[in-house]
Amino acid sequence: MDDVVWDGSAFDDSVDRHLARWRGKAPYDETVEAVITRVQMLAKQVANTKRRMHDKVGLQAPEFETLHRLAARDDRRATPSELAAELLLSGAGMTGRLDALEQAGLIRRIRGTADRRRVDVELTDAGHARWLEGMRLQGLIENDIVQVLDAAERDQVNALLKKMLLRAEQHAAEGADVA
Image 1 (cartoon, helix red, strand yellow):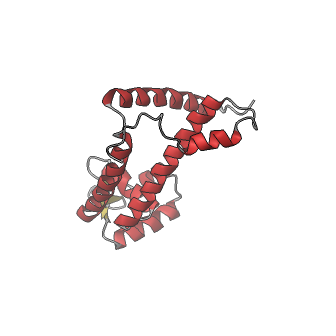
Image 2 (cartoon, helix red, strand yellow):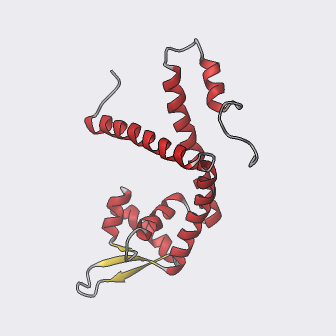
Image 3 (cartoon, helix red, strand yellow):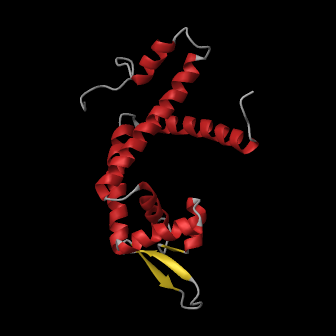
C-alpha cells in the first residue's frame, strides 16, 4: 500500500458505497453526508486502534485514561477528587479504579506532608512506561493514517476540522437541537 498514490479519486471508500446505496432514497445533501460520515468513520477506525492498543499494553480504556491524566501533569500527581472530576467519575468509582492500578504497581497513593489527611495519586515509573508504550503504539497508527497527506494538506484539514468543531461546540453550548 505504501507505493499507492492516495489522491482519493481512484478508489471507493466505505462512504462512497454508503452514498451510492442511499442516493435518491433519502433527502440529504450528499456532500454534507459525505463529510460527516467520513469524520464518523475515521473516529470509529481510530477508536478501534485504541482498543487494540489497550489490549497490547494490558489495560482497559478507563485505566489507560487515568494514567494519561496523571502523565499530563508536570509532577505526575493529582488528588483522587481531581481525577474523579476530570474523568467524570464518582468518588467510589475512582477509588475502585485506583485500587486496581495501585495493585498493578502503575500508581501509588502518597500521604501529604503538610496535611496527613490529603492523599495524592502518583504515576509510578512502571505506570509511566506502560502509558508511554501505549502512546507509542497509538502514534504509529495515527501517523500512518495522516501521512497520506502532505504538510499543506494536513494544515488545511486541521484548519477545516477546527472550524467545524468550533461550530459543533457552539451548537452544544447553546443547546441547539434539530429544528
